[in-house]
Every structure is written in structure tokens, then in C-alpha cells.
Image: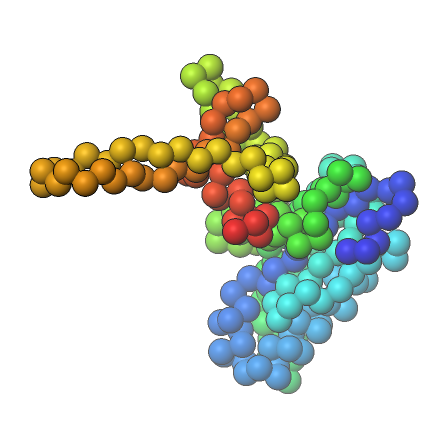
Length: 216
């Protein structure tokens, strides 16, 4: 992801081979690898040369799409999806019908780490039920305060990073009332993250984004 330099924005394509574990179980590890190789070559012929393509894991390919036009990136992703669906993969005398699910994540100059960018594209792919689809990553929103103000998960991650750097997480002690008549005082330690306007976010609102960002 070091290609995120200069003036250009990019889109990450996370291309997951649907039901690859089933293919590997049915065809064997070596043949499954040949299937992925065949699909890689097929997709490479679809994708213009200015976009970088790589194998990310056993069943995932990635493309670093040069440009930030969501519609054009989405059109290319749909072209890949539909053409792979119509492609008959022949390996070791056997034929395989392959489909792919593609998650897309936009990269800008203010983008977070490369790991989180890949994670976003992965999340976008995971949202597609039953596979064989294309989906752009969309930030989730959390409602805070009595006025119903919403914050995106990315904003919450930024707030948490700043709070960790500044050591500004708020701690509160809440008395625990014993139902057994115990006179010894006990307290529960509560953690709160402060928003830009002073609103408090409880752990249920910020731990999910924190986990996504690898901050736990």
C-alpha cells in the first residue's frame, strides 16, 4: 500500500473467491491453487495496466485502482464480477463455475493505515449475502447525546486515537450497592470517550470501531 503517494486517490478492490474452501476440499489444495491462478490471469486481462493487482491470501486478490471515481471503480468491479461468473475454469480435466465477491474501499490523502483500508474493503465484501456481488464500504454511524447527533465510525476512531495519545479517556467510579447487606464500599470503574462537543461515548459505542482499527 506504499503506492498511496503523490496527488492521486485510489480505490482498493478486495476480490474474494466465493466458497473457496469448498473448492479446495473438492479439488484438493494443488488444483484449488490452479483455479485461483486461472482466475487471476482472467481478471488481469480485464483490468487496465495502470491498476496494480496482487494476490493477498489463499482466496483473495486485491487491486489498487488508480483514481477516486466511485462510479467508474464500481463499473470495473461489476465487469470483473459478471465476466468471472460467465467464465468456465478448467483445471486438471475438471470444470469449475467460479463467482467472486468484491469489496471496495476509497483511499484519500486522509486515509488511515493500509491495514484498516484493507479491513474496510473486506468488511464491504462480507456484507454481500450469498456472495457474487459488489459493495462499497460505508462508514457505520453511532448516535450520541440527547439531540440524536451521529458520528461515523471513522470519526470515533480518530477521537479514540487522540484520546490515547493525550491520555484523555475519562474514568468514572460508580458505587455498587450490595443486595446482601455488605457494608464494604465497592465501585465499578467506567470508561468514557469524549466527543468534540463534550458528549460522552460509552464502551458499547466505541469498542467496535476500536477493534476494527486495531486499537485494542
